[in-house]
Image 1 (spheres, one colour):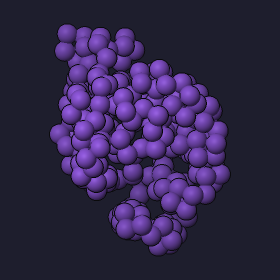
Image 2 (image 1 turned 90 degrees about the vertical axis):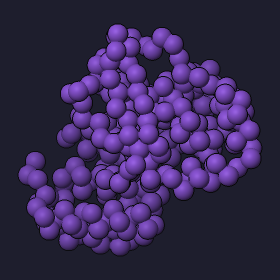
Image 3 (image 1 turned 45 degrees about the horizontal axis):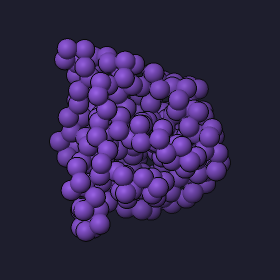
Image 4 (image 1 turned 30 degrees about the vertical axis):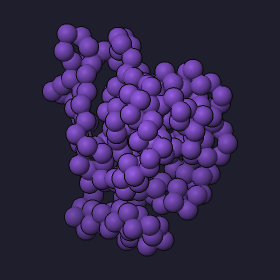
Length: 243
């Protein structure tokens, strides 16, 4: 795929900026200025997905994500977006099965595990949901992901238990792979599924004595307001103090 030139990159960045401001209409207008032959670029399609997600047009989101996963199956977040669209279309079992099918491809992606927990929870499989959430905490940073989980209605049946959840030990075999130093995980990507977001979080998994370990240095800025709101909640703070 031909890379975006400077002009097209600027339009893409402007589209992301409009999305951050909550204006998906202007974001779409920016994408229309990108050269026609490059509108199928995966970065452009990813932002297009975000635009239609903001407009809650989930059928279109599903079509876009399906296209990207076929053309660029190595992009983990497109599989996440595909499942998210399925879930919003009330096809939660399919959403879960889709992520389960690619789990071994992306063993170090905490959002994949977190979303599996959400889907299992909505399917009434709370034991499985807790297991996936524990694994997500292991990779994504326990405190940060607990705050996100306590603000996620999909996990509401587990809210009173989240403070008690701890990362599993030992870590599952399929995730015990070394991703350091040859990894392509960018700062904050484990905590943020939004495209090209400027993140202050950092997650760098590495292997030590065949055990996958991870650290996270703060929440992604794209969700910081949500984290701050959670911190101000006495109920949430009480739950976190259990751990």
